[in-house]
Amino acid sequence: METGELNAPSFKQQFKSREELHFPEGKITVVDVVPRVLSDETPVLLVPGWSENYDTYKKTLAVGFNEGRRIVTVGQSGNGQSPESQEYPEEELRKAQLLLNVLGKKGIEKADVIAHSEGAINGLIAAIMKPYQFRNIVLDKPAGFIGKDTKAALTGRFIKLLLQEIIARPILLTDSTSSIRAGARTARYIAENPQRVLKEMDALTSVDITEIMTSLSNQGIKFSVIAGVNDPLFPVSRQIADMREHGNVPPLKGYYSVIGGHNKLSIDASRHASLAFNALENLRDLKDSS
Image (cartoon, rainbow, N blue to C red; front, side):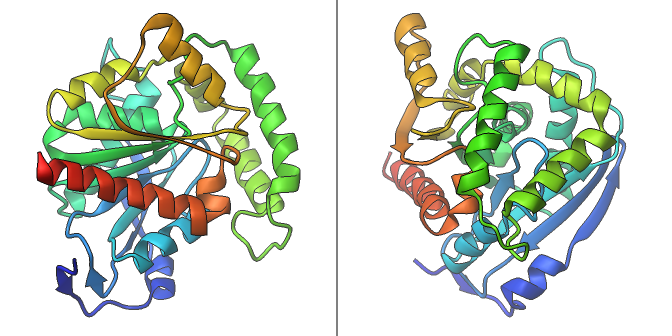
C-alpha cells in the first residue's frame, strides 16, 4: 500500500549524492535513496558484507527503490575508537556503533534491515545494542551461522568463492559488480586495513549469531535467512548441519534456500534482491497480523 508521495530526485541523482560523516568510531559514507512514492514508511538499512560498500549494492538499491522502499547503506573507511566490550569483537562493535550513529544522524527512529555476509554480525550487534530502533531483519548469506570455524578453513572457502565468481560475475567494467571492480575493492580494502582484516577474520570465525537472534526475537524482532545452495563461503549444508547436530536453531520466520552463490544479492539483484525485500514484506505482514 502506498503510504505517501515525495518530491524526490531520480535514483541516479540520489545514488551519486553521498554524505560523508565523521564520528569517534571513524569515517563513514552514506547513500540514502528515497522513492517518490513510499510503499512502506519504515526505511531499510542495507548492511554491506566484508570489504564491500555502496557501489557493490547499486543494483540492489535500485530494486528496493523501484519497490517503494527508502534504503540507507554505507561505506566504512578509516579507523576510530571501539566501544569497550567483553562480549563482542571490537571491530564488529565499532561497525555496529557506526550504523547506529548513521540512523541517529539521519533521524531514523526504526528501521528494517537487510544484512549481507559479515554485515549480519555487526548489524545484529547494532540491533542488540538498541533493539527499539529495529523492526524486522533479513540475513542474506550470513556469517556466524555455520557453527565452529577456523581461519584456515575460512580462507580456503574464500579462495573457492573467488574462483567461482570469475565466471559468475559480469565482465563489463561499467557494472559495479564486475570481477575487476569487485577485486579492486577487495584488494584496496586489504591493503588499507591489514590489521583490521585480521580482527575481522577473528570475528568471522568466532561469532555465533544464533544467541543474538534469540534475544532479539524475544523483544519482538522477526528474522528470515536467505542461504545460497552454491555458496562456498557459508554453505547451506553447514548451516543445516549445525542446527541439526547441536540443536542450534534460531527463531526464524523464514528460511530461503536459493540457487546461487554468496554475492547474488548484488550480482543478480533483479531476482535475489527482490527476494530479500519480499522477505521483509512477509515479516511485516506477520508482525501486523500477530
